[in-house]
Each structure stands twice: as C-alpha cells, then as structure tokens.
Image (tube, rainbow, N blue to C red; front, side):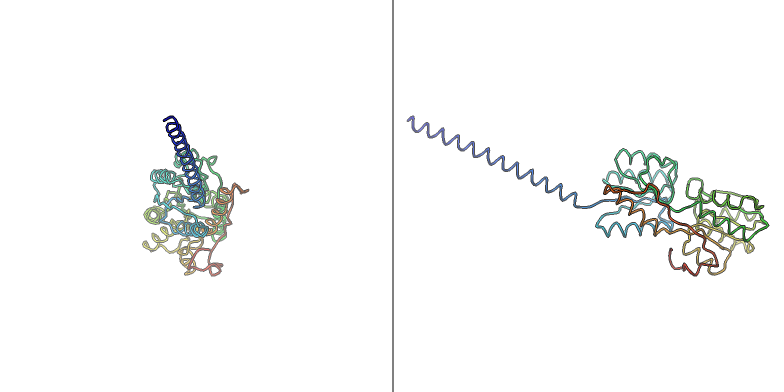
Length: 327
C-alpha cells in the first residue's frame, strides 16, 4: 500500500512539472509572436498626412501629386485632406489624421494664425511638421519649412510693372491677409514699386480665389476706371481680375499674378491683358518636402528652411516654359 501511494505521489509531481514546462513554452512562443508582430508593424513603413489650404487650386493638386509619387515609390502611405479654405475644418481633419497614427504631416495652413490649435495637437502627439509654401505664424512648432521665395516672386512682378509704366499710375491689389505667402508677395511687390509714382487706389482681400476676385475687380473697375494695372496675390486672383476686365470690355490694363500656372502662361502666350506671373514650382516644393520629411524621420541632418527659386514669366520667355504644365 505504501509503495502504491509513493508511486502515485511521484506520478502527480511529474505531471505538475510537465504542465509548468508546457505553460512556460507557450508563454515563450507568445512573446516571440508579439515580437514578430512588432517587427512586421515597423516594416509596414511610414504614414504621412497632407493638408493644404484648398485642393481646389491646381497649384496644390500638382504639389500633392509630386509628394504622393515620391511617398508611394518608397512603399509608404499618404493621407490627403481638403479643408477648402475652412480653417476649423482643417483643424478637425488634422485631429483625425493624428488619430490615424501618422508619422509626419505636410502642412499648408488655411489661416497662418488660426491654425495654431492644430500645431499644438501635433506637437503633443510628437508628430513632425513639414510646413510648406505658406509659413505658419507660430513657427516654433514647425520642424522644417519648404517654400518658394515668395517675396522675390512679388518683387520680380513689381520690377516688370515699373519697366512697363515708368511714369507710374493708379493700380489695384488683390491680396489675402490670412495667407502669409501672399503677404510676402505683396511686400516684395510694394518694395519694387516704391518711389515710382504708383497710386494704390484699391487693395482688397480676394481670398486667393478666382470667383471672389472676379466680383471684387468688377467693383474696382467701376469705382476706378483709370487704373492701369492689377496685382493679384496668386494666379487664380489674377485670372478672376482678367475675367472681370474682359466681361466689362476693359482692355487697356495690365494684370499680374503669382504662381506660373498653365492657365496664366496660356493667357500670357496669347498676348492677353495677363502680362506676367511670378513663377514658382509646386513640383519642386513637393519633392523637396518629401526629401526633408524622410531626413527627419530617419534621424538624418536636414535644413530647417529650404527655399525654392522664383522668377518672372512674361511674353519674352513664356515659350521656354510651355503652357501645358507646371515648371
């Protein structure tokens, strides 16, 4: 009887030890699986967010395409949103992208001041901000900036105006105070025409929008029939001014924009009243933004500010750049 009881105890102990060993092996395998899952997650690549002031502008459409091409060529993902000039919507869309665990964001603000709540959220989430084309006011939140030399874009337009009208005259300006890129262009333009007898009889916010600019320009032409030129802060504003001039049969006026868009170049090439544009390259801005983003995420050295050249396109050189696409 004692021998049977001793044998039973030995068998019981052996069984318990076997269960413990199996459990430890199972936990070990589970830990290995978790590690493999983590490795697989890290190998999935980066997810980028993209937001512009509006994707209804061809400039930003081309810029987004340039970013998307390079991001997807690396096997990574780009999430694109369109706030359509609504800063509150842009902030909400950025909050949604943060919830989707983006690794970095390409950001162009609807309102260079009003975007601040989104910048704070991005900083709290530890997400690098590649601010492009238009600087935000609270630049301390920005990781890096890539954009055109907007002040020079306005300056070359102003220099062309002075050359065309050496005696000066009455002019109008279509600006957009919430867009710092346009603020810089207007500043460069004003510096170029300073001291050359130009009288600014109207300066209004066209919001960078063709339809808005059209309506404003019609009112300006009615109130100031003697103006000799209109400066648009971007090409859509200038094209709106052109449409207003054509619809009101006003022919003796020079219209300028900034962008170098295909539509603007086509008008210049046709010899219309649209005589010049301070050109920039959305393709270059997009490609350089992606280069900087990967440098940041990969822990490499990068430039905090990356300028992109701007220059004048007018009737003298428009054929060099063509009218079918962006330079």
